Length: 496
Ligand SMILES: Cc1cc2nc3c(=O)[nH]c(=O)nc-3n(C[C@H](O)[C@H](O)[C@H](O)COP(=O)(O)OP(=O)(O)OC[C@H]3O[C@@H](n4cnc5c(N)ncnc54)[C@H](O)[C@@H]3O)c2cc1C
Image (cartoon, rainbow, N blue to C red):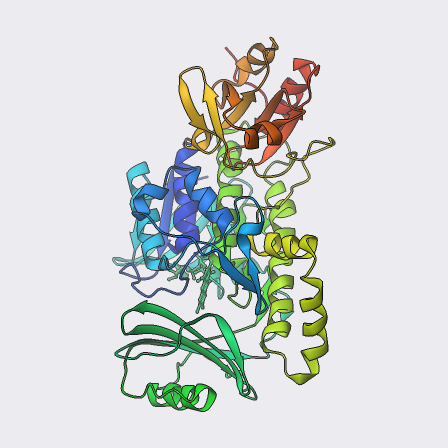
Protein backbone atom coordinates (compact mmCIF):
# COMPACT_ATOMS: atom_id res chain seq x y z
CA UNK A 1 0.00 0.00 0.00
CA UNK A 2 1.45 3.45 -0.90
CA UNK A 3 2.43 5.74 1.96
CA UNK A 4 -0.05 8.39 3.01
CA UNK A 5 0.66 11.97 1.93
CA UNK A 6 -1.11 13.22 5.02
CA UNK A 7 -3.38 12.00 7.82
CA UNK A 8 -6.63 13.69 6.81
CA UNK A 9 -7.79 15.25 3.56
CA UNK A 10 -10.62 17.77 3.89
CA UNK A 11 -12.60 18.63 0.76
CA UNK A 12 -13.71 22.25 1.00
CA UNK A 13 -12.28 25.33 2.73
CA UNK A 14 -15.59 26.84 3.78
CA UNK A 15 -15.90 27.75 7.47
CA UNK A 16 -16.50 24.13 8.48
CA UNK A 17 -13.53 22.65 6.59
CA UNK A 18 -11.26 25.38 7.99
CA UNK A 19 -12.49 24.87 11.57
CA UNK A 20 -11.96 21.14 11.28
CA UNK A 21 -8.47 21.63 9.87
CA UNK A 22 -7.49 23.76 12.87
CA UNK A 23 -9.04 21.31 15.34
CA UNK A 24 -7.09 18.44 13.76
CA UNK A 25 -3.87 20.42 14.01
CA UNK A 26 -4.58 21.09 17.69
CA UNK A 27 -4.99 17.32 17.95
CA UNK A 28 -1.51 16.90 16.43
CA UNK A 29 -2.38 15.30 13.09
CA UNK A 30 -1.41 16.33 9.57
CA UNK A 31 -4.14 17.78 7.39
CA UNK A 32 -4.49 18.95 3.79
CA UNK A 33 -7.51 21.07 2.82
CA UNK A 34 -8.43 20.98 -0.86
CA UNK A 35 -10.56 23.91 -2.04
CA UNK A 36 -12.01 24.24 -5.52
CA UNK A 37 -12.03 28.05 -5.58
CA UNK A 38 -8.78 29.79 -6.29
CA UNK A 39 -9.51 32.76 -4.01
CA UNK A 40 -11.22 33.02 -0.64
CA UNK A 41 -14.78 34.19 -1.24
CA UNK A 42 -15.71 37.73 -0.27
CA UNK A 43 -19.39 36.82 -0.49
CA UNK A 44 -20.97 36.50 2.87
CA UNK A 45 -23.98 34.26 3.28
CA UNK A 46 -24.06 34.15 7.10
CA UNK A 47 -24.26 37.48 8.91
CA UNK A 48 -23.70 35.98 12.36
CA UNK A 49 -23.60 32.85 14.48
CA UNK A 50 -25.37 31.49 17.52
CA UNK A 51 -24.49 31.99 21.18
CA UNK A 52 -23.08 28.46 21.45
CA UNK A 53 -20.78 29.19 18.51
CA UNK A 54 -19.57 32.33 20.30
CA UNK A 55 -18.61 30.05 23.20
CA UNK A 56 -16.94 27.59 20.84
CA UNK A 57 -14.75 30.38 19.45
CA UNK A 58 -14.12 31.60 23.01
CA UNK A 59 -12.99 28.16 24.16
CA UNK A 60 -10.31 28.22 21.45
CA UNK A 61 -9.23 31.79 22.31
CA UNK A 62 -10.43 33.12 18.94
CA UNK A 63 -12.70 35.99 20.00
CA UNK A 64 -9.98 38.69 20.05
CA UNK A 65 -9.32 37.96 16.38
CA UNK A 66 -12.82 39.19 15.55
CA UNK A 67 -11.90 42.61 16.90
CA UNK A 68 -14.99 42.80 19.08
CA UNK A 69 -18.62 42.40 18.14
CA UNK A 70 -21.94 42.88 19.85
CA UNK A 71 -24.59 40.29 20.46
CA UNK A 72 -28.24 40.53 19.48
CA UNK A 73 -30.48 40.45 22.56
CA UNK A 74 -33.86 40.23 20.84
CA UNK A 75 -34.47 37.56 18.25
CA UNK A 76 -37.40 35.46 17.17
CA UNK A 77 -38.69 31.97 16.62
CA UNK A 78 -40.59 31.79 13.36
CA UNK A 79 -41.28 35.50 13.60
CA UNK A 80 -42.44 35.45 17.26
CA UNK A 81 -40.27 37.94 19.11
CA UNK A 82 -38.21 36.52 22.01
CA UNK A 83 -35.68 38.07 24.38
CA UNK A 84 -32.81 35.60 24.08
CA UNK A 85 -31.17 36.92 27.28
CA UNK A 86 -33.83 35.03 29.17
CA UNK A 87 -31.52 31.98 29.24
CA UNK A 88 -28.08 32.17 30.91
CA UNK A 89 -25.47 32.92 28.24
CA UNK A 90 -28.22 33.48 25.69
CA UNK A 91 -28.38 35.93 22.80
CA UNK A 92 -29.69 35.74 19.26
CA UNK A 93 -26.01 35.44 18.33
CA UNK A 94 -23.17 37.59 17.09
CA UNK A 95 -24.27 40.84 15.51
CA UNK A 96 -23.31 41.37 11.90
CA UNK A 97 -20.14 39.27 11.65
CA UNK A 98 -19.85 38.45 7.94
CA UNK A 99 -19.14 34.83 7.04
CA UNK A 100 -16.18 36.05 4.96
CA UNK A 101 -14.57 37.45 8.15
CA UNK A 102 -15.24 34.23 10.09
CA UNK A 103 -13.70 32.20 7.27
CA UNK A 104 -10.64 34.42 6.96
CA UNK A 105 -10.02 34.20 10.73
CA UNK A 106 -10.32 30.41 10.62
CA UNK A 107 -8.06 30.29 7.56
CA UNK A 108 -5.41 32.38 9.34
CA UNK A 109 -5.68 30.33 12.55
CA UNK A 110 -5.51 27.00 10.71
CA UNK A 111 -2.53 28.14 8.67
CA UNK A 112 -0.69 29.29 11.82
CA UNK A 113 -1.32 25.86 13.32
CA UNK A 114 0.18 24.19 10.24
CA UNK A 115 -2.82 23.17 8.13
CA UNK A 116 -1.90 22.83 4.44
CA UNK A 117 -4.68 24.73 2.61
CA UNK A 118 -4.55 24.38 -1.16
CA UNK A 119 -6.81 26.54 -3.33
CA UNK A 120 -7.66 25.69 -6.90
CA UNK A 121 -7.67 21.97 -6.02
CA UNK A 122 -10.97 20.18 -6.80
CA UNK A 123 -11.79 16.75 -5.43
CA UNK A 124 -13.13 14.67 -8.32
CA UNK A 125 -13.12 11.12 -7.00
CA UNK A 126 -11.77 8.71 -4.40
CA UNK A 127 -11.13 5.06 -3.66
CA UNK A 128 -11.41 3.96 -0.05
CA UNK A 129 -9.78 0.76 1.20
CA UNK A 130 -9.26 -0.68 4.67
CA UNK A 131 -6.15 1.42 5.31
CA UNK A 132 -7.02 4.75 3.80
CA UNK A 133 -8.46 6.85 1.01
CA UNK A 134 -6.85 7.69 -2.29
CA UNK A 135 -8.32 10.99 -3.52
CA UNK A 136 -8.38 12.12 -7.16
CA UNK A 137 -7.89 15.85 -7.55
CA UNK A 138 -7.81 18.40 -10.35
CA UNK A 139 -4.90 20.55 -9.25
CA UNK A 140 -3.51 23.69 -10.90
CA UNK A 141 -0.83 21.39 -12.40
CA UNK A 142 -3.31 18.85 -13.69
CA UNK A 143 -4.82 15.64 -12.28
CA UNK A 144 -3.20 14.29 -9.09
CA UNK A 145 -3.85 11.63 -6.48
CA UNK A 146 -3.34 12.21 -2.77
CA UNK A 147 -3.63 9.56 -0.09
CA UNK A 148 -4.70 9.93 3.54
CA UNK A 149 -6.04 7.82 6.37
CA UNK A 150 -9.39 9.68 6.24
CA UNK A 151 -11.32 11.96 3.89
CA UNK A 152 -13.82 14.47 5.26
CA UNK A 153 -16.34 16.10 2.93
CA UNK A 154 -16.85 19.70 4.02
CA UNK A 155 -17.73 20.57 0.46
CA UNK A 156 -21.14 22.13 0.95
CA UNK A 157 -24.74 21.20 0.23
CA UNK A 158 -24.00 19.73 -3.19
CA UNK A 159 -21.13 17.69 -1.71
CA UNK A 160 -19.14 15.69 -4.25
CA UNK A 161 -17.76 13.51 -1.44
CA UNK A 162 -21.24 12.63 -0.19
CA UNK A 163 -22.41 11.73 -3.70
CA UNK A 164 -19.30 9.69 -4.54
CA UNK A 165 -19.59 7.86 -1.22
CA UNK A 166 -23.17 6.93 -2.16
CA UNK A 167 -24.49 8.33 1.12
CA UNK A 168 -28.23 9.01 0.95
CA UNK A 169 -29.44 12.58 1.49
CA UNK A 170 -33.10 12.15 2.31
CA UNK A 171 -35.42 15.01 3.17
CA UNK A 172 -37.88 17.48 1.75
CA UNK A 173 -37.72 19.26 -1.57
CA UNK A 174 -38.03 23.01 -1.61
CA UNK A 175 -41.50 24.46 -1.37
CA UNK A 176 -40.42 28.08 -1.14
CA UNK A 177 -37.73 30.23 -2.67
CA UNK A 178 -36.24 33.39 -1.20
CA UNK A 179 -34.16 35.96 -3.04
CA UNK A 180 -31.72 38.45 -1.58
CA UNK A 181 -29.60 41.36 -2.72
CA UNK A 182 -26.87 43.37 -1.06
CA UNK A 183 -27.49 46.91 -2.20
CA UNK A 184 -25.73 50.26 -1.81
CA UNK A 185 -27.49 53.60 -2.14
CA UNK A 186 -30.85 52.69 -0.64
CA UNK A 187 -32.69 53.38 2.60
CA UNK A 188 -35.41 51.00 3.65
CA UNK A 189 -37.04 50.20 6.97
CA UNK A 190 -34.70 47.82 8.86
CA UNK A 191 -36.44 44.49 9.49
CA UNK A 192 -33.73 42.20 10.97
CA UNK A 193 -36.27 39.76 12.38
CA UNK A 194 -38.43 39.85 9.28
CA UNK A 195 -41.88 41.23 8.70
CA UNK A 196 -44.84 39.31 7.37
CA UNK A 197 -46.52 41.35 4.65
CA UNK A 198 -49.68 40.50 2.70
CA UNK A 199 -47.67 39.08 -0.22
CA UNK A 200 -45.11 37.09 1.80
CA UNK A 201 -42.14 37.97 4.01
CA UNK A 202 -39.46 40.67 3.91
CA UNK A 203 -36.20 41.07 5.84
CA UNK A 204 -33.82 44.01 5.72
CA UNK A 205 -30.44 44.02 7.48
CA UNK A 206 -28.73 47.39 7.64
CA UNK A 207 -25.03 47.04 6.83
CA UNK A 208 -24.06 50.71 6.49
CA UNK A 209 -25.70 54.14 6.32
CA UNK A 210 -27.22 53.38 2.93
CA UNK A 211 -26.27 49.73 2.50
CA UNK A 212 -28.79 46.95 3.14
CA UNK A 213 -29.23 43.25 2.55
CA UNK A 214 -32.84 42.83 1.47
CA UNK A 215 -34.32 39.34 1.48
CA UNK A 216 -37.83 38.41 0.48
CA UNK A 217 -40.25 35.59 -0.08
CA UNK A 218 -43.15 36.24 -2.41
CA UNK A 219 -46.07 33.91 -1.87
CA UNK A 220 -46.91 31.88 -4.95
CA UNK A 221 -43.40 31.91 -6.43
CA UNK A 222 -42.45 28.32 -7.16
CA UNK A 223 -38.81 27.29 -6.50
CA UNK A 224 -36.89 27.19 -9.77
CA UNK A 225 -34.20 24.66 -10.54
CA UNK A 226 -30.57 25.84 -10.72
CA UNK A 227 -28.86 28.70 -8.98
CA UNK A 228 -29.28 31.55 -11.49
CA UNK A 229 -30.09 34.69 -9.44
CA UNK A 230 -32.89 37.09 -10.36
CA UNK A 231 -31.96 40.35 -12.08
CA UNK A 232 -31.88 43.52 -9.98
CA UNK A 233 -34.95 44.98 -11.74
CA UNK A 234 -36.79 41.76 -10.76
CA UNK A 235 -35.63 42.18 -7.14
CA UNK A 236 -36.64 45.87 -7.05
CA UNK A 237 -40.04 45.11 -8.58
CA UNK A 238 -40.74 42.35 -6.03
CA UNK A 239 -39.63 44.60 -3.15
CA UNK A 240 -41.96 47.35 -4.37
CA UNK A 241 -44.87 44.90 -4.60
CA UNK A 242 -44.22 43.55 -1.11
CA UNK A 243 -43.29 46.72 0.80
CA UNK A 244 -44.17 49.74 -1.30
CA UNK A 245 -40.48 50.83 -1.01
CA UNK A 246 -38.70 51.75 -4.21
CA UNK A 247 -35.10 50.45 -4.27
CA UNK A 248 -34.69 50.51 -8.04
CA UNK A 249 -32.00 53.24 -7.93
CA UNK A 250 -29.71 51.11 -5.71
CA UNK A 251 -26.48 49.44 -6.83
CA UNK A 252 -26.45 45.71 -6.04
CA UNK A 253 -23.10 44.08 -5.28
CA UNK A 254 -24.50 40.56 -4.91
CA UNK A 255 -27.81 38.93 -5.74
CA UNK A 256 -28.72 35.37 -4.89
CA UNK A 257 -31.52 33.04 -4.01
CA UNK A 258 -31.97 30.09 -1.73
CA UNK A 259 -34.71 27.67 -0.78
CA UNK A 260 -36.04 25.74 2.17
CA UNK A 261 -34.90 22.37 0.77
CA UNK A 262 -34.18 20.38 3.95
CA UNK A 263 -32.07 17.27 3.77
CA UNK A 264 -29.70 15.33 5.98
CA UNK A 265 -27.04 12.74 5.20
CA UNK A 266 -28.18 9.33 6.38
CA UNK A 267 -24.63 8.53 7.55
CA UNK A 268 -22.11 11.08 8.81
CA UNK A 269 -19.47 8.37 8.58
CA UNK A 270 -18.98 5.56 6.16
CA UNK A 271 -15.72 3.82 6.96
CA UNK A 272 -12.92 6.24 6.23
CA UNK A 273 -15.14 8.93 4.76
CA UNK A 274 -16.95 11.48 6.92
CA UNK A 275 -19.19 14.46 6.27
CA UNK A 276 -19.57 17.75 8.15
CA UNK A 277 -21.38 21.06 7.72
CA UNK A 278 -23.69 21.69 4.77
CA UNK A 279 -22.41 18.46 3.19
CA UNK A 280 -24.27 16.69 6.02
CA UNK A 281 -27.33 18.94 6.44
CA UNK A 282 -29.12 21.70 4.56
CA UNK A 283 -32.14 23.71 5.61
CA UNK A 284 -33.65 27.17 5.53
CA UNK A 285 -31.11 29.64 6.99
CA UNK A 286 -33.07 30.94 9.93
CA UNK A 287 -31.70 31.81 13.35
CA UNK A 288 -28.06 31.64 12.22
CA UNK A 289 -28.04 27.90 12.65
CA UNK A 290 -26.48 26.59 9.41
CA UNK A 291 -22.85 27.56 9.72
CA UNK A 292 -23.06 27.28 13.50
CA UNK A 293 -24.20 23.66 13.35
CA UNK A 294 -21.43 22.85 10.90
CA UNK A 295 -18.75 24.52 13.03
CA UNK A 296 -19.93 22.48 16.00
CA UNK A 297 -19.81 19.31 13.87
CA UNK A 298 -16.16 20.14 13.22
CA UNK A 299 -15.37 20.65 16.90
CA UNK A 300 -17.11 17.37 17.79
CA UNK A 301 -15.22 15.47 15.09
CA UNK A 302 -11.72 16.94 15.32
CA UNK A 303 -10.50 15.46 18.59
CA UNK A 304 -12.13 12.08 17.92
CA UNK A 305 -10.54 11.75 14.49
CA UNK A 306 -7.17 12.86 15.87
CA UNK A 307 -7.40 10.20 18.61
CA UNK A 308 -8.26 7.57 15.98
CA UNK A 309 -5.25 8.54 13.87
CA UNK A 310 -2.92 8.51 16.87
CA UNK A 311 -4.19 4.99 17.57
CA UNK A 312 -5.42 5.63 21.10
CA UNK A 313 -9.14 6.22 20.43
CA UNK A 314 -11.30 3.86 22.43
CA UNK A 315 -13.50 1.49 20.42
CA UNK A 316 -16.51 3.27 18.97
CA UNK A 317 -15.34 6.82 19.75
CA UNK A 318 -15.32 7.90 16.10
CA UNK A 319 -18.83 6.49 15.62
CA UNK A 320 -20.10 8.81 18.35
CA UNK A 321 -19.59 11.59 15.80
CA UNK A 322 -22.67 10.32 13.94
CA UNK A 323 -24.61 9.25 17.01
CA UNK A 324 -24.11 12.66 18.66
CA UNK A 325 -24.30 15.05 15.72
CA UNK A 326 -26.93 13.43 13.50
CA UNK A 327 -29.70 14.01 16.09
CA UNK A 328 -28.53 17.62 16.51
CA UNK A 329 -28.75 18.18 12.75
CA UNK A 330 -32.18 16.51 12.64
CA UNK A 331 -33.46 18.84 15.38
CA UNK A 332 -32.13 21.89 13.54
CA UNK A 333 -33.93 20.81 10.38
CA UNK A 334 -37.11 20.20 12.36
CA UNK A 335 -37.02 23.60 14.03
CA UNK A 336 -36.29 25.46 10.80
CA UNK A 337 -39.24 23.73 9.12
CA UNK A 338 -41.46 24.64 12.07
CA UNK A 339 -40.21 28.22 11.93
CA UNK A 340 -40.90 28.35 8.20
CA UNK A 341 -44.53 27.40 8.78
CA UNK A 342 -44.96 30.02 11.51
CA UNK A 343 -43.02 32.64 9.64
CA UNK A 344 -44.41 32.49 6.13
CA UNK A 345 -47.54 30.37 6.38
CA UNK A 346 -50.62 32.09 5.00
CA UNK A 347 -54.00 32.63 6.67
CA UNK A 348 -54.42 28.86 7.14
CA UNK A 349 -51.55 28.95 9.67
CA UNK A 350 -52.92 31.89 11.66
CA UNK A 351 -54.65 29.70 14.31
CA UNK A 352 -51.41 27.81 15.00
CA UNK A 353 -49.43 31.04 15.13
CA UNK A 354 -51.96 32.48 17.58
CA UNK A 355 -51.73 29.35 19.72
CA UNK A 356 -47.92 29.36 19.79
CA UNK A 357 -48.01 33.08 20.58
CA UNK A 358 -50.24 32.30 23.56
CA UNK A 359 -47.85 29.57 24.67
CA UNK A 360 -44.93 32.00 24.68
CA UNK A 361 -46.55 33.66 27.69
CA UNK A 362 -44.99 30.76 29.65
CA UNK A 363 -41.33 31.18 30.58
CA UNK A 364 -40.60 27.46 30.08
CA UNK A 365 -41.92 27.62 26.52
CA UNK A 366 -39.86 30.73 25.74
CA UNK A 367 -36.72 29.12 27.16
CA UNK A 368 -37.35 25.93 25.24
CA UNK A 369 -37.65 27.82 21.95
CA UNK A 370 -34.58 29.95 22.71
CA UNK A 371 -32.51 26.90 23.65
CA UNK A 372 -33.66 25.15 20.49
CA UNK A 373 -32.12 27.87 18.34
CA UNK A 374 -29.03 28.71 20.40
CA UNK A 375 -27.85 25.13 20.84
CA UNK A 376 -26.99 25.91 24.45
CA UNK A 377 -28.80 22.87 25.84
CA UNK A 378 -27.48 20.19 23.48
CA UNK A 379 -27.00 17.10 25.65
CA UNK A 380 -25.07 14.07 24.48
CA UNK A 381 -25.57 10.60 25.89
CA UNK A 382 -22.33 10.16 27.81
CA UNK A 383 -23.51 7.49 30.22
CA UNK A 384 -25.43 7.27 33.45
CA UNK A 385 -25.54 10.02 36.05
CA UNK A 386 -27.87 12.66 37.39
CA UNK A 387 -25.82 15.83 37.44
CA UNK A 388 -27.34 18.64 35.32
CA UNK A 389 -23.99 19.28 33.60
CA UNK A 390 -23.54 15.67 32.48
CA UNK A 391 -23.45 15.47 28.67
CA UNK A 392 -23.94 19.23 28.40
CA UNK A 393 -21.58 22.03 27.44
CA UNK A 394 -19.44 23.39 30.25
CA UNK A 395 -20.75 26.97 30.34
CA UNK A 396 -18.39 29.91 30.50
CA UNK A 397 -17.63 30.41 34.21
CA UNK A 398 -14.87 32.25 36.02
CA UNK A 399 -12.56 30.12 38.16
CA UNK A 400 -9.92 30.72 40.81
CA UNK A 401 -6.99 28.37 40.24
CA UNK A 402 -3.65 27.98 42.04
CA UNK A 403 -1.85 30.14 39.48
CA UNK A 404 -4.50 32.86 39.37
CA UNK A 405 -7.92 33.59 37.85
CA UNK A 406 -8.97 31.60 34.81
CA UNK A 407 -12.21 30.40 33.24
CA UNK A 408 -13.78 27.18 32.09
CA UNK A 409 -13.48 28.33 28.46
CA UNK A 410 -9.84 29.31 28.81
CA UNK A 411 -9.00 25.80 30.04
CA UNK A 412 -10.10 24.49 26.62
CA UNK A 413 -7.87 26.70 24.47
CA UNK A 414 -5.54 23.82 23.64
CA UNK A 415 -8.38 21.41 22.77
CA UNK A 416 -7.27 18.85 25.33
CA UNK A 417 -9.36 16.97 27.84
CA UNK A 418 -9.64 18.62 31.27
CA UNK A 419 -10.14 17.08 34.71
CA UNK A 420 -11.50 19.94 36.80
CA UNK A 421 -10.91 19.18 40.47
CA UNK A 422 -13.34 21.16 42.61
CA UNK A 423 -12.78 19.71 46.07
CA UNK A 424 -9.81 19.08 48.37
CA UNK A 425 -10.12 15.35 47.91
CA UNK A 426 -6.93 13.54 47.10
CA UNK A 427 -6.58 10.90 44.46
CA UNK A 428 -7.93 12.75 41.40
CA UNK A 429 -4.53 13.86 40.14
CA UNK A 430 -3.06 10.39 40.72
CA UNK A 431 -5.98 8.76 38.87
CA UNK A 432 -5.57 11.11 35.90
CA UNK A 433 -1.75 11.04 35.80
CA UNK A 434 -1.46 8.17 33.25
CA UNK A 435 -3.43 10.32 30.75
CA UNK A 436 -1.34 13.48 31.32
CA UNK A 437 -0.25 13.39 27.68
CA UNK A 438 -3.88 14.00 26.57
CA UNK A 439 -5.70 15.46 29.57
CA UNK A 440 -4.91 18.40 31.88
CA UNK A 441 -5.76 18.17 35.56
CA UNK A 442 -6.71 21.56 37.01
CA UNK A 443 -7.63 22.16 40.66
CA UNK A 444 -9.87 25.23 40.81
CA UNK A 445 -12.80 26.82 42.62
CA UNK A 446 -15.77 28.68 41.18
CA UNK A 447 -15.09 32.41 41.40
CA UNK A 448 -18.70 33.52 41.86
CA UNK A 449 -22.15 32.30 42.89
CA UNK A 450 -23.05 31.31 39.29
CA UNK A 451 -20.15 28.90 39.21
CA UNK A 452 -20.90 27.62 42.71
CA UNK A 453 -24.46 26.88 41.62
CA UNK A 454 -23.40 25.16 38.38
CA UNK A 455 -20.84 22.97 40.15
CA UNK A 456 -22.99 22.13 43.16
CA UNK A 457 -22.88 18.39 43.76
CA UNK A 458 -19.64 17.89 41.79
CA UNK A 459 -16.24 17.11 43.32
CA UNK A 460 -14.56 16.62 39.94
CA UNK A 461 -15.54 16.84 36.25
CA UNK A 462 -14.09 15.37 33.09
CA UNK A 463 -14.50 17.74 30.15
CA UNK A 464 -13.93 16.63 26.57
CA UNK A 465 -11.87 18.78 24.17
CA UNK A 466 -15.12 19.96 22.52
CA UNK A 467 -16.27 21.46 25.83
CA UNK A 468 -18.88 18.83 26.78
CA UNK A 469 -18.91 17.26 30.23
CA UNK A 470 -18.23 13.54 29.89
CA UNK A 471 -18.28 12.60 33.57
CA UNK A 472 -19.18 14.16 36.93
CA UNK A 473 -17.90 12.77 40.22
CA UNK A 474 -20.12 13.70 43.17
CA UNK A 475 -18.43 14.15 46.59
CA UNK A 476 -17.28 10.79 47.90
CA UNK A 477 -16.74 9.25 44.45
CA UNK A 478 -13.78 6.88 44.16
CA UNK A 479 -11.01 8.22 41.88
CA UNK A 480 -11.22 4.85 40.14
CA UNK A 481 -14.48 6.09 38.55
CA UNK A 482 -12.52 8.96 37.03
CA UNK A 483 -9.96 6.50 35.65
CA UNK A 484 -12.81 4.47 34.13
CA UNK A 485 -14.22 7.61 32.47
CA UNK A 486 -10.78 8.57 31.15
CA UNK A 487 -10.41 5.10 29.65
CA UNK A 488 -13.83 5.37 28.05
CA UNK A 489 -13.22 8.77 26.43
CA UNK A 490 -9.45 8.98 25.99
CA UNK A 491 -8.47 5.35 25.50
CA UNK A 492 -5.66 3.40 27.05
CA UNK A 493 -3.02 5.58 28.70
CA UNK A 494 0.39 5.93 27.08
CA UNK A 495 2.84 3.24 28.21
CA UNK A 496 6.09 4.24 29.91
C1 LIG B 1 -28.57 33.66 2.41
C2 LIG B 1 -27.94 32.79 3.46
C3 LIG B 1 -27.78 33.30 4.73
C4 LIG B 1 -27.21 32.50 5.73
N1 LIG B 1 -27.06 33.03 6.98
C5 LIG B 1 -26.52 32.27 7.96
C6 LIG B 1 -26.30 32.82 9.27
O1 LIG B 1 -26.59 33.99 9.54
N2 LIG B 1 -25.70 32.02 10.21
C7 LIG B 1 -25.32 30.74 9.93
O2 LIG B 1 -24.81 30.06 10.84
N3 LIG B 1 -25.50 30.20 8.70
C8 LIG B 1 -26.08 30.94 7.70
N4 LIG B 1 -26.23 30.42 6.46
C9 LIG B 1 -25.74 29.07 6.19
C10 LIG B 1 -24.22 29.07 5.97
O3 LIG B 1 -23.86 29.98 4.97
C11 LIG B 1 -23.77 27.67 5.61
O4 LIG B 1 -24.32 26.77 6.54
C12 LIG B 1 -22.23 27.57 5.63
O5 LIG B 1 -21.64 28.27 4.55
C13 LIG B 1 -21.80 26.10 5.54
O6 LIG B 1 -20.41 26.03 5.59
P1 LIG B 1 -19.66 24.79 4.96
O7 LIG B 1 -18.21 25.04 5.20
O8 LIG B 1 -20.27 23.53 5.42
O9 LIG B 1 -19.98 24.83 3.40
P2 LIG B 1 -19.66 25.98 2.34
O10 LIG B 1 -19.58 27.31 2.97
O11 LIG B 1 -20.64 25.78 1.23
O12 LIG B 1 -18.19 25.63 1.83
C14 LIG B 1 -17.96 24.50 1.01
C15 LIG B 1 -16.65 24.71 0.28
O13 LIG B 1 -16.34 23.53 -0.46
C16 LIG B 1 -15.82 23.90 -1.71
N5 LIG B 1 -16.02 22.75 -2.62
C17 LIG B 1 -17.18 22.29 -3.12
N6 LIG B 1 -16.96 21.19 -3.88
C18 LIG B 1 -15.63 20.95 -3.82
C19 LIG B 1 -14.79 19.95 -4.39
N7 LIG B 1 -15.28 18.96 -5.17
N8 LIG B 1 -13.46 20.00 -4.14
C20 LIG B 1 -12.94 20.98 -3.37
N9 LIG B 1 -13.69 21.98 -2.82
C21 LIG B 1 -15.02 21.94 -3.04
C22 LIG B 1 -16.62 25.13 -2.09
O14 LIG B 1 -15.92 25.91 -3.06
C23 LIG B 1 -16.74 25.84 -0.75
O15 LIG B 1 -15.66 26.73 -0.53
C24 LIG B 1 -26.80 31.19 5.44
C25 LIG B 1 -26.97 30.68 4.15
C26 LIG B 1 -27.55 31.47 3.16
C27 LIG B 1 -27.74 30.90 1.79
